[in-house]
Image (cartoon, rainbow, N blue to C red):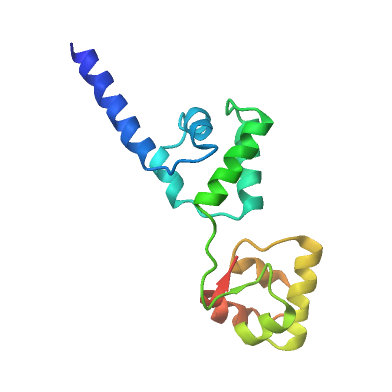
Length: 152
């Protein structure tokens, strides 16, 4: 009897969590392949680009998520459609902005902003503001002062 009550409670909790996710292609695959490790309602808090979701889903697939490559693509598309990364108004995305946008938005000189873009092109995207501190020719005090105006 107690086992039956526990099973009902678990099933109800799963249904409530699953109900938080919007309908669409990929939802059932996500619930089947991903909720063994992740709580269904937590997916709504994730915000990534299409490429980030693709990388995350494939990484999870390599770690044992039970889904085919086609299913992983469907899950990534579902996540991006329902939980996309929202650009932060008033912030400069240092991974996408031009040198002029970086200079104007972050208070850097034109040569410092060019150094940021050149470094980005040679080393890939920045993850946090501290990643910019290693760029030769860029004043670290300016970077730290502008950290709240940066998006990644």
